[in-house]
Each structure stands twice: as structure tokens, then as C-alpha cells.
Amino acid sequence: MVKRTLSERINAAAQTMPVVSVTGPRQSGKTTLAKSVFPNYAYANLENLPTRQFASENPVGFLKQYPNGLIIDEAQYIPELFSYIQVEVDQSRQNGRYILTGSQNFLLMEKITQSLAGRVAVFNLLPFSIQELEDTPFQLKNPFEYMVKGLYPRVYDQNTPPEIFYPSYLLTYLERDVRLLKNIGNLAAFERFVRLCAGHIGQIFNQTSLSNDTNFSQSTIKSWLSVLETSFVAFLLPPYFRNYNKRLLKTPKLYFYDTGLACSLLGIRTATELENHPMRGPLFENFIVVEYMKQFLHHGHRPGCYYWRDNSGNEIDLLIEQAGQIYPVEIKSSQTLKPDFFKNLQFFQKISGTPAEQSFLIYAGTENQQRTHGNARSWDNFPNLA
Image (cartoon, rainbow, N blue to C red; front, side, top):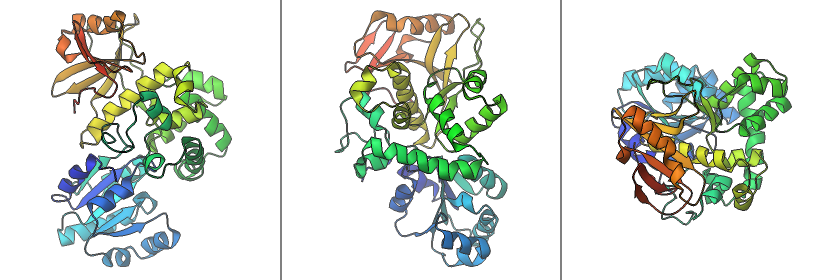
């Protein structure tokens, strides 16, 4: 079993909080993580209809039968259960009493905010990080192999081929999560929207363009994007607003939480196809951005990740804000270092005063070098800034 970075964080949280919540995409390993950290806890999956019915019809009886710790999977299915959990933990004053998992972040967080505020530690678990796979039988040598294969655990520990896993994942996602989150009558149109989003990875999120491409209103596009965000399929990377005497773009950029799903949606089946594909650069950028987000989330921290672009086209792919410091990161899918890769870092250093030692170029090659305008790091050796 691959040890998850988040294990120690949720174990520590259970020593001081009565409830621990772990949300994340379907199949990201939430249940496996919870069971490995709390092996003596009982387990209840609310996707199981008889279990869900019992919890809904008799919540007090359901909770009373598990006095020594309970993992509740897909807890958002029974939102009224949260009030009863509050009563139980207030009466027992027992830390680590309940571990809640769920794959719909908004639904779960809404109920936590309403009923369990001050009683719950909240964490997000994404699919494997490349650091978690280091020195395991699953470690890969090529970033493009990781990008096509993705990092969902089942693709590795069950050796499920990506061409089987991701179409099935998408079908399950459409039939379960989308219908639960929104009353979307035309799932075929929504699926077309998801595929269009995959083709817009790394771009400014343009509701007007997507509205024109799908023939749906901008309000519908906004609503559909919220479904992708809530269910951990896609997210918007916010712009960094600090004004360095330049007019800045203030619209977020679109990324997917896993490039394996994105590649599947784009019809990319092999690393060779990806290396020669027009989306190679945006997908590599997506890959590195999400790996940085995993550094934060899997250590229990809120991601301090942004991008920066002015109206003259100067851009930094990723800005990381940590402990009052800014770390600009340029991302290049080339396997060869070129001097002009550092020009945006050089420009940003000039207007922001950021020192070169805090500036990084992450690329698809293997060498690590200290350059005049920043640190060049290989795709599998970038700094941990969380």
C-alpha cells in the first residue's frame, strides 16, 4: 500500500477534534486512507441503500450502534445526520469519534458549516502525488507517462488500464454525481461541455466562448462549472492581484485535478501521442500546478497558488504565496533548457523585487541548475514550498 502524506495529519487531528472530514474526487483513496489510519473503526457506506435508509429513518439508532469510532463514507447523502452527530459528540466529548468522507465538496462542507462548526477538522485528498509514488513499484520515469496514466490509485494498485478506467469513471461521474448535484436533463450536452473544458486547460476561463461553443447560456455554463468544482473534476486558479504598476488580468484560469482524465477526454492514449500533441504544454502546466496543490492539501494546508499576467502579455504560470513570501514558478514542457525560458521570471523579478533564489523554472528534463535568473528544476525534483 502506498502511504499517503495526509495520513499523519488526519491521525493528529483525531487526537484533538471529535470529527475529521476528508473530501476529494471519487476514487482518490479516501476510504482506503481512513481505514488504514483508523483500522479498528466500524465502517458505513451511505451509498449502500439499506445503510442509507437505516441512517435516514433512525439516525439516533444508527449512531448509537457504533460507540467506539465510525467511518461514514459519502456522508453528504444524509445531511440530516450531521445534527445528530453534533449531539453525540457534544455529549460524549470523545475526540476522533467520527471520520466523514465525501466526494461532493460543496454539499459536505455546507452541512459541516451548519452543524459541525468548531467540532470538525477538514482535509482534502487528491489522487496520488508523484512524491508519494517515489521508491514504490509504481514510480515512473517519464512525466508524460504520469500525465496520460493519471494518478488515481486504482490505475496503479489494480493495474487498471487508463483507456478502461477513465471512460468508466466519466460514465459513473455523469450518472451519480452530476444527477445528485444538479438536475441536468441533457447529460450528453454536459459531457460535451466537460470535453470542451479539457481543451481549454491552462486558458483564461471564458464563459462567453464556452457558451457559444455549447449553445447554452452563460449562466448555465457558470452553473455547470460549479458542478465540476464541487465534484473535484476541475478548478479555477485565481489571479494574483497585487499591482506592480501594471494593469493585471483578473480572470481565473481553468485546470483539471487529474491530467489522466483530461487526456482521456482529449483522446490522448499514450505518452508518445501526448509529446506530439498541441495540448502538451498546457497539460504539463496543469500537471505541475496540481502537484504543487497536493503539496499544500496533503499537508493539511490551504493552497497559496495563483497565476499572474499583465495586459502586455507578461505572465508567470504559478505564484506560490507562503509565509509572506512570493515564489514565482515558470513551467515548460520542453526537455531541454533554453535561455529565453527565464525571461518572464526576469521581468517579474524586476517589477516585484523577488530574488532569483526564490524563482523557479520547472521543466520536463532531468537536470537541476542554478541560473542567474532562477533555479531550473526537473519535473520530479521541484521544491516543496508547503
